[in-house]
Length: 318
Image (cartoon, rainbow, N blue to C red):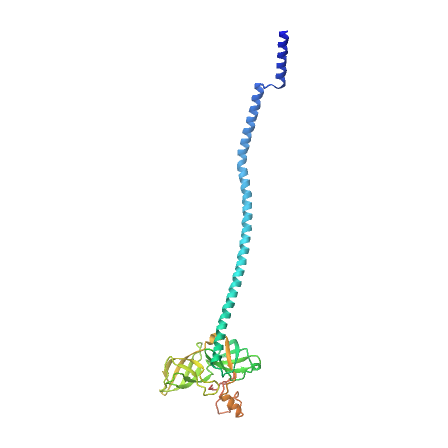
């Protein structure tokens, strides 16, 4: 009975061993296979690491380039917008400065009219400069439709500009006092002098003036202010002409001449006032039945400014 039992036990052991027991040889082979598989993975991982690095780097480079181009386009657009805004601000600033300067000039003109309430004036804008052979004429934007007539004086807050020398319906030509064709009765404003002479323009780019026919003993000095005398009847008296810079004796020693810096800046004229109610010598000629715009008969001298475009210019006292 004991042997049978032992046999049974041994059979059970054999049966168990053949079904799933852990045999030493089988376990070692499995371990070796796992070890070789892990080692292979390590080698593959090591070999693929540079490839992954390169591929990953290329991917990051492409993405970086894309981001760079996107950022660059964004920056370019932003710079373009900022440039446009800057130009708009610069233009607005220029317009504001121009308006401010214009307001200052108009305020001076207004003050000028307040200081001379007896004069009726028509404001005008200068629309062109330096016309004519002598570059001594400007155009203003008012004409006969606005009541302007020949020989009316033109002024601004600084002083005398010239006289109307041509009238059209909507514009007029102004002969500047700096023209060699202009003649103005001048008077020294200094109370203890009151020396009088004839002021005319001097040909040249400086647009200087000259006062001539001063007597030998005339009391005129550098720094004296010269104003219109009003004697000729084409300009009211007392309008500033300019300031004496130099006094010299004429050849022969009988008369003096003086160089005058004009009070008006002809190069930057923008606005003007035309005095429309001054009645002077021109009105006297009209009352006498004479046309003040036509030169005197042969043998005489014109009492008005020569018209632009005439080949012969006559001396004028205005």
